Image (cartoon, rainbow, N blue to C red; front, top):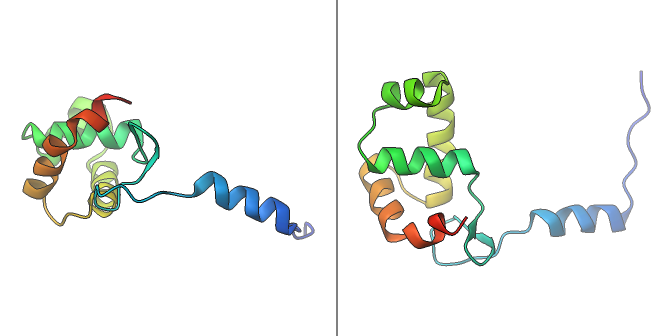
Length: 103
């Protein structure tokens, strides 16, 4: 059995600072720097394709991933965008195109 990792207060503070998200008014999607959404590039790509009307099956085929992976991404995207359905996500994407495009 390996020994447990010991974290110093400084290393914990540094890790927390690296992951800190600042509120922006974009739902739960916080910007780390101007124009850089906390959503991954893949999440942003999926969000834009959903806004274009892609189904989960179409997303999976287009991105060469499984439908299960699409669902996981969508779950995370919905939480970050603070929306509960695809229509609201499409509206969010259109309202925030400048933030997404800046990445």
